[in-house]
Structure formats: structure tokens, C-alpha cells
Image (cartoon, rainbow, N blue to C red; front, side):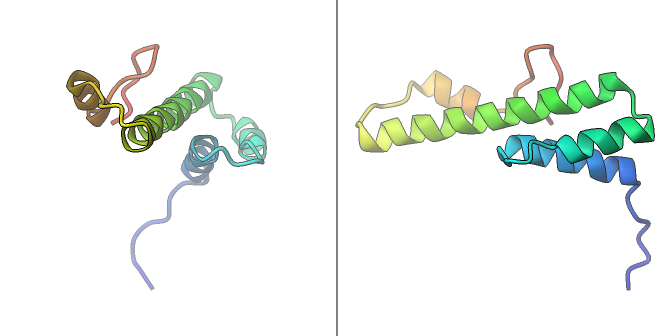
Length: 98
């Protein structure tokens, strides 16, 4: 058994919410949202987690589409786009994803 301290239940719920959104899980994180509201987690923190998770999900989809176009359609990705896609980017409101 590990001596590492357990993560706080609010952190677990935030991670679960984010991973559910990023993975397009059909449950949509609604259970975690309810838990987070019940725990008194500020709405601003929940919105930040949702924004970052959606950004990561959308960025992953874009990268998959670019790779598909390159392989299936023979379309060469613009090197500037490729370089930008490989870096950590921020959300529309400026939240860092790294």
C-alpha cells in the first residue's frame, strides 16, 4: 500500500469532468457537475475546467483531421500549421492548457 496522500474528492471530480468532456463521453460529466456544485466549488473554476477540456478535445480533433487529410487525400499540411499544432496553445480566453 502506498503512503502517498489521496487526491481531494474535488480534484478527482474536476479531472473526471475534464476527461469526460475531452473524450466526448456520453454521460457529459453531468454527475461530476452535480458533485462539484454540492461541494461548493466556485462556478468560475468549473467553467475554466470545461473551457480547457473543450479546447483539448477540439485541438485533438483538428490534429486528427490534419493527419487524415495528409495521408488519405495527399494534402500536405502547411509547416507553420504543423508547428503551431505541436505546441501547447491557450484557450480562447487565454487559459493555458499546459
